[in-house]
Image 1 (spheres, rainbow, N blue to C red):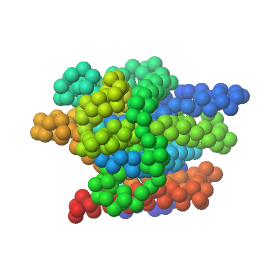
Image 2 (image 1 turned 90 degrees about the vertical axis):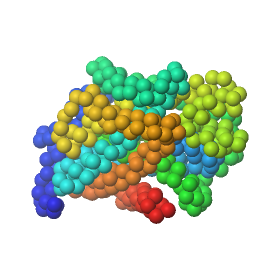
Image 3 (image 1 turned 60 degrees about the horizontal axis):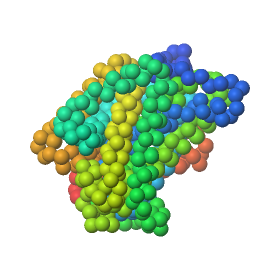
Image 4 (image 1 turned 45 degrees about the horizontal axis):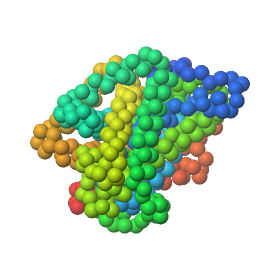
Length: 451
């Protein structure tokens, strides 16, 4: 299908970017959180705190655990540089998503639907849905494993029970969006505390940790290391989070004026930057604990979450370490389901203008994620679910260009963004990040097909 004429595309885009002529993103929560007028800068900033932490959930979900554990156990602290660089890319990309949502009044999915031809939109929508299913796959496995470790629940039963988490989302949404944000932030705090204790018990060598944050060329020349590194990128920079963030920032009731939008962009960017630094701490913490506990003690083959759970307490000499590990995993899986549901709603409504009850959407995507988990568990057992968890993050990495390129293209175009368009240096940096992601994905595809 050929693209519509430029004049028609501009008309469609202007229609989407006009609140009076189009649907609101997350209509049940749109502009529902007041920003106090005339209040101090701190109070106004606090009014914008929340969306960044909800987005950061996707950067420390169970998929991250699999790739970080594998990276730390196999290669020590070397891949800390990948986690850091991935997190810096995430901070930049999430700031662009927030800018798009605030400046235009619409999320990334709505903008794509307005400007791109139908065939391209179908492709983008399918890529987004595949990414959400892959993320859901990680959540199902992570939640099931956590329930097994904590309560001895069979893996298959835990996977099936994970579909019931839609009830949590529905209850919190009924109470108000701030309650949902508070719930997410409480679980994030729990995860951070659990890993702070484990890092303290692991007592990693500071010099080795600092050296790990310096990029090493061996990452690109070692195929096994590169595979895990790309999985870390896929697990860290989540494609559907870009759609999610561009919608969540619109839950604030700020002045839809030039000054109001500029302030909203500033506070929202600060919010997501701080939240993603927490995600960096958690992801680095997982890898540091794995490197200190397994790589240096002759357990380099530890790649399964279950193995890590069994070994971490004896190796660290802290009896509660394994329990903290499992509790943090359960919190990560629960949190991820909440934001995954919202992202699915935003993508479906933005691309298709199709509304579906959150519980129905959650059961649909969870069903698609549960089936492969059940099949792999029956055929290959628990080890197969670990491999599936890492593979799901590779799928996420392959979907990144389908979200990153449209986002950077929109925010770099003055015709679409007006006075909020990116400066030339930031635009070039953003395209550079998109290019790095493309190169890494092409490298992964080549090694998978011809390696």
